[in-house]
Length: 161
Image (cartoon, rainbow, N blue to C red):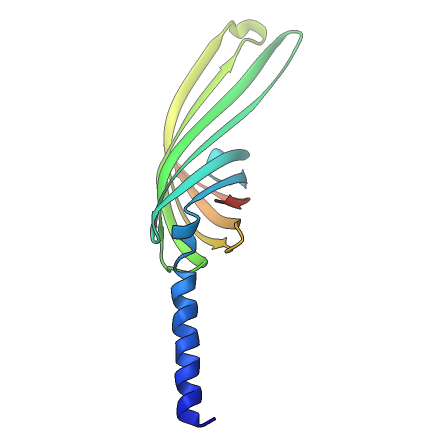
């Protein structure tokens, strides 16, 4: 095989592999993950829908609560945002941003049935790996903004479909 033929063969293989890897977010545009840390602080269930290979919308929900015979307390998180992928490959850095609504309530002790809610903004640089088989891994650093600035890490594991 001549060098020219070998070069053409390698170029064709690389181009076809690049075209296949760009299709991962279009063939399996949805994913469901469980996150530890991140924009909902402790944990969350997440859903993401890729609208294009470079742009996705996502939503998260989380609840933390407990109680005893004297009362209970709970915190509910509901979050939504957008994500921009920098590469059209299965492994890509991304930038995301959005809002998180948090509501807390308690009926413990002298508080009666008090509750409060607020909204904070988040932004995150991160990295996502989405295999052709459907496995999804995401890791990022979340910058949470309300009245001050807070940095919190987060990782997600899930499945794409």
